[in-house]
Length: 265
Image (cartoon, rainbow, N blue to C red; front, side):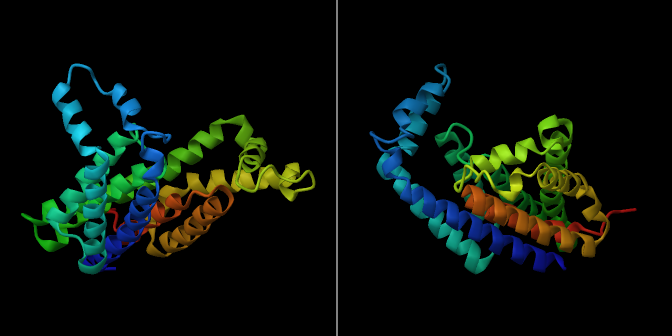
């Protein structure tokens, strides 16, 4: 995969992810109104009291009409990303827009998907910035490696944390999570309540996430790993309704596929 191909796929996959997120924000307008669950008048109290200018700025930005204009501009920017690919000022706007939405929802709206979306946006912004004064083959690589290292370390740390937790090692955590899923609680006769199967699934997750750094050794290994990861995130979406996770993590895969096998060994 060349730099331009990786850039094209990154822009398209990120665009799909941000399109889903932006359309969701449009649908959440009622929940962000005065009688909703994400009322700005309540959330703004967490801003520092000694920063009145910042408070006034965010009060303006998160006014209902201004927020709608912001989302509309974000939707146009996402369409531009899908149709034309990344550009410096487009990525600057999407970066600032994403950070503003993080402020709106107290740092994160959907946890890990917000984090990884910011990583991919930042990586593409870094690529465009470095491309301004670097040759093409070097200008984009910094952003690709930024995304890749964050993605690989996220998988690895997740596996390491599971390994340290006894409830993951004995399979009980898997049952607990599935009981809380959108199809939960599990039936008393569910196969996942079998200790052997629960332990096998749990250790499969632990080993798979823990081996994430190995994808950097080979493009073939990275391709298989990304396919398994896409299936894993789709199952998370299926059982828990976390559709943002699927699109956000898939958006990082083009960078990982580009960097795989390119370690300076």
